[in-house]
Image (cartoon, rainbow, N blue to C red; front, side):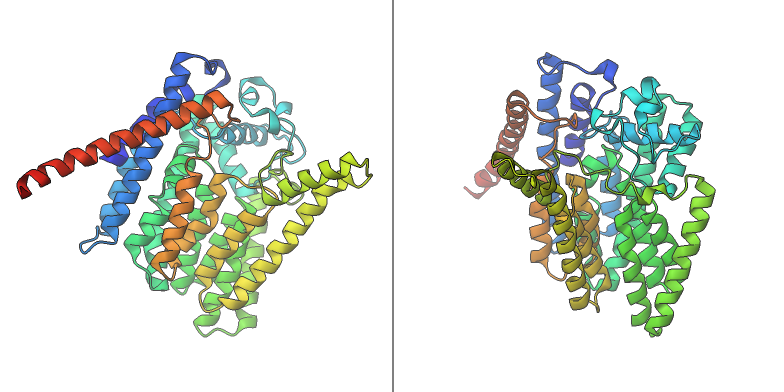
Length: 453
């Protein structure tokens, strides 16, 4: 009930403080927008508290069953189904890109500004003139949705959220099976990997396509574990044709076959052929071509908070003070170094954890998110999803959960940059939730003290 209250406040607050259509945006000083921001952060803290308390039950003597946790997930997600987009405007980009594909425009060479019209106006200015970084599978889904909704924004938003919910459902279905294979507790895996606040805030409320990527990746690994490596490779490839990082899952499919007794060369060849056939077929059906390969750097914005971007900007500013001609090269150089570090870290992970391919894949995706040239709070879910299923100890889960709690508070519901006034309102909403939770705790303790006396 506490988690349901949290997502209900999220949905209500989002009505005035979320990533609203341009015509409905309220000025930051507007009373309704201010109250909405307070309400959203009030709800976020309630949701985090409910999640932490549920985690205690999962670790208790009578933990809830996976079926119970699936029901809790459905209840918590329900208020967000009809809420406006929250914490990002990316869903408008998805819809605009789908409309571009539907109109036979080159979505990889042109940005949504080329589309024009009300839908393009909803896309964040940063992405108005940039091509899509997504693979043909997702763009085919977005195009089909555009045709069904005929460019109507509310219907499109609802449809894209249903796609995200399908992805979350696939994630939740895959987690118990992956956990059993890895010798982990299925309930603990669901708690960390599916009921996680980041899943509800960014995959459900934000309707990010990472949900369908992770869902396809999860069921692909389950298929490979079940002795169907060709199907597993095909599903993992479909996940990579939504967003590219999932391609690392093919290494896990190969290792799972080797563990089952298949010769390494045959396992690698089978996986490569299945992946190639799936890529050619999906690209042909989508009709979008292979331009997404050259557009993979689209998420790298000038003000990205990735470590390599921060170091690149700092180095460029320092060189600029000395009028060095190398200043413009600082950011690309750090991005390249970040990619090299990522490659080394990923290789070391796979070498050391070859007997545990699911866990190795989770850590590898976490490394890609941490050291890559672009980062968003929901990118943490790439690795977290599989770490939840295969973490070897409770302490690993606790550390990952702590990171989750911090990232859940890192983004404004509008998806835009924060000013001092908005930060103060957000902190006020969170602080109010803490006070309410403390008072509820004290009230619950008081009868117990009275009975003891």
